[in-house]
Image 1 (cartoon, helix red, strand yellow):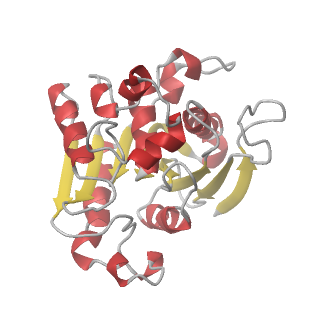
Image 2: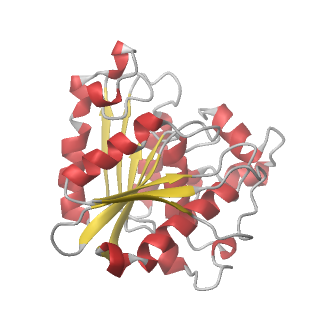
Length: 272
């Protein structure tokens, strides 16, 4: 395996509000066989941190499924939009630029996000062609576009059922209605949004299940294929739902929900 941590931006390129922070990309590149698909992982954390439970353990699962894995340590508060999305677009372009070296099939790259990381993944899925993501030399919409989305209990809507803390951290508490609408991603789906795999739990107490339901409905309205699983019971932040991502809270071990990984692996094989 090629495992390294690389700076996402070259000196002078990063314009984040926190000058002591540098976004990084962790590589988990398999060395066996020929070209493979890849999954770029965005951990959750309410746009205020990135959770270890949704980082390296997810990369290990992705590798075991037969794909290269990458984990993005993206900008969070006090950084505001568009910096996290700039990081995400840069990360997928870096993977494509190194496709030959890392033996990545550049046309088979999924993004996988958890909670606020799911919002970032879905943001890239609907906003990949935004002009502000194409200003860097060599950047264009197709290089920014993921080939598939994996959205795990994602933050999506900024409406009545929003996870308000994520939007406050991303946009500020004084965000305009226009910006809240722009980042309410169920309102931004279009026919060329990538196909998606979504899962959530009915009684998630942090991010209401409506985020997944409204995004799936928007995908359906635009003719975008998706697979959606709503499990009846489970706390927020389940990650792999097993001992690998257990942090002392027994509610994070949930065998009923842990089947999402097998379901997603089957979907990935059919989609990428």
